[in-house]
Image (cartoon, rainbow, N blue to C red; front, side, top):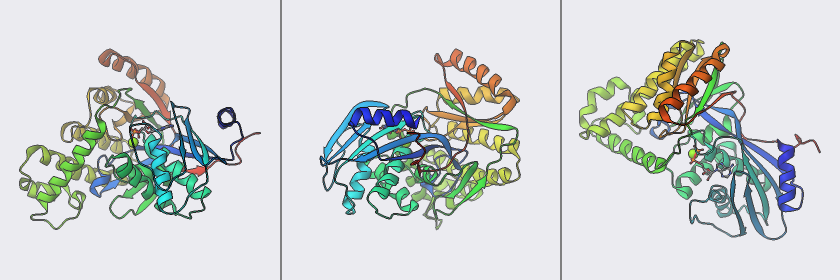
Length: 389
Ligand code: ADP
Ligand code: MG
């Protein structure tokens, strides 16, 4: 694939690329809508993601192209940049802006992106394109940022340049992911552990509902605000910094402080989901995939009924999975409102699962989902030297 991309680069820019980088997408195994509430999450990097080929140019411009989009950008090198519309190139331009403001600038760069990950489907192609850009600029400008600093820069771009109030989980997983490991990440302290993700007889299935996620960003931001409101109410009696500082049990003792019923439901999801991640981590360590799977189903149920970020498409995937004895668990992954679900499916029955799910889903929803099996892969890296010239 990288050879093909090198050819594309040559055709577009009329010279060879110099460097090539890759950042994966991610799935979140459990712990949804937790990262901006300071709790525990369990994401893993996948083997699909975003490639970036670069070479300096001498015309004083950033020239950006994406194989995935028709629009392109040629922009003069400046001291700062701003977002004007919803075009894709504001993701990398936001990263360039942060480097420029910190005094790390290039004289001009040609950049070609390609994502083999479904874009806008909850597998975090946005974090992937941010982190791959930050990693590349760090190398090309000799800025010397640590990986954690690159994660924070990328998150800042998503929050304050793009305008999505997401937590740190996505960029963290994309940067720190490790082959065959899940990351047990405390989103408050940023302490993390890469834990063995030995799936035994099971494999990880990713199901793309293929539902376009309309209004996802505004609804996402609405949930963030609801959580802030719940926290404020609880702080009347409890000395806490984050919703996830309390267990489900403590929450039920103080839940009446939250007068708005909807806000109370949102907070209930958050604290109970956080408890579930603690349990799930123990089950994964004990290789108890069946118990892990039950927690995934419980997570989905809460996201559907308490947090209300699912939808009939994601629910259809979980409904079918529940009827199949070869599935340990399934749930939506990522922000929701469409996008992707994941399932733990017995390896030998994956083909049957895929066939039956496609038929069930298509009957119910009216179009087909995409069903893939995925491996857990490494985080952002340079791919220099992997090309056959
Ligand atoms: P998700 O992160 O779940 O995939 P988002 O809506 O957060 O969905 O981010 C998707 C956006 O990220 C795209 O609309 C585009 O602007 C940008 N993007 C991601 N991957 C690429 C790519 N390969 N080329 C260009 N833009 C990309
Ligand atoms: Mg995103």
